[in-house]
Image (cartoon, rainbow, N blue to C red; front, side):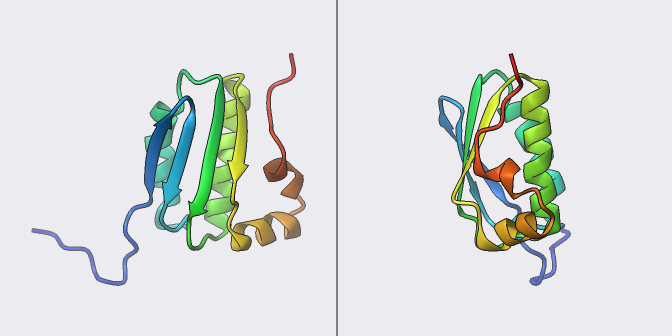
Length: 112
């Protein structure tokens, strides 16, 4: 049995609430972002609009911000609208510094 070291963060969880609404639990960082992206790609299919609640994300880093930007890209590609609720302060600060804050603050959608 391969046990993870205690210092390794647990996987972030994606909970589907129905009607394109999702909650994320756990840190959004380099240790969790790739796995969460893989799991979300299928979960987000079929919805015309996505609402992602990040209230249960205690921390995030640049990989977490990159994940949110990738979700924006995928939503645009699939002609979905996407809205992030309760963006963690760390990720919001990184977005501000990176001058991409406007992407996370409003709804993003593909132009008709």
